[in-house]
Image 1: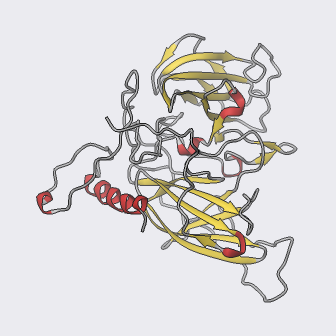
Image 2 (image 1 turned 180 degrees about the horizontal axis):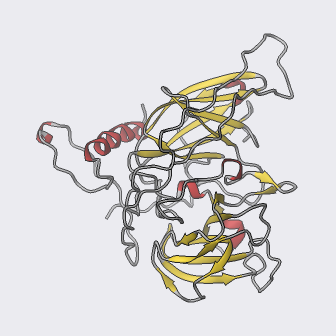
Length: 379
């Protein structure tokens, strides 16, 4: 097991003992007899971002289907393969419930960055729309630069972090007032904290009404406006983006929000790198994840090509957030053959897998960052 794997195991044990969801020091009976636990890396901010109030947010649920059967365009004639098939998910008795969020910022490893709280209130039941995740393709091959959260018109939209409002109203895409702007009525916040020397922004689009003005300072949880369906939208929802802007690229500097929004306490995130046999990332590959016990499952497709960006460490092209900690099975139908892999999700952490076509799942760790990667150091 590599160092990262051992660290994850240790951190998992710590978090199970705390149950409070914070990354603070704990006192455990008999701790003096336990092995020394390495210090957890933390980030410093200027100014320091204060933790958001701990809230309960709705649980993400998979789309209910009678069954799933895949048919590949390139069959393998050598042998007949079993179809990948799941029955309808067994949902929890209260599907809108989930544990309270960890306070932000949460960064239990050097490479993770859960800096933002959720942009909606505790009673909202949807997260996120399965077919409109980051990197999805729709509207004549437009690639999605954020995530969509289904909301009825008039639902309050909240700031995911503190900072200054730098855009309010129509015209975000073009940079000037435009009632036909695809983002519709939108808000953008430049946050008063960054990452690796880069500015961080969040975007809230398709609003029915905006309640903040440019240059206004907001805190995490402040109401920015209410949801709607302005701009290019097939129905009422919130389009949410995270941008890591190092060189003024704006729209072209987005990142997957599911790697930046803090998970509920005791829950984690799955990131994957899905490739063909030659090691090239595959577009639109369906991946299904289900717990070792139970019928509920989650679906996601690998990113399509477009103005999207992978995390410099994970180099992922698929993310599924809000998975309760525990053991899961990943299933991929690649060229008519079903590949399966067990994986464990740890609370407050990103678990990673890689898949390489006919070679199946691999034990490769995430690729090392480039030479320009400069992770923050512990204080």
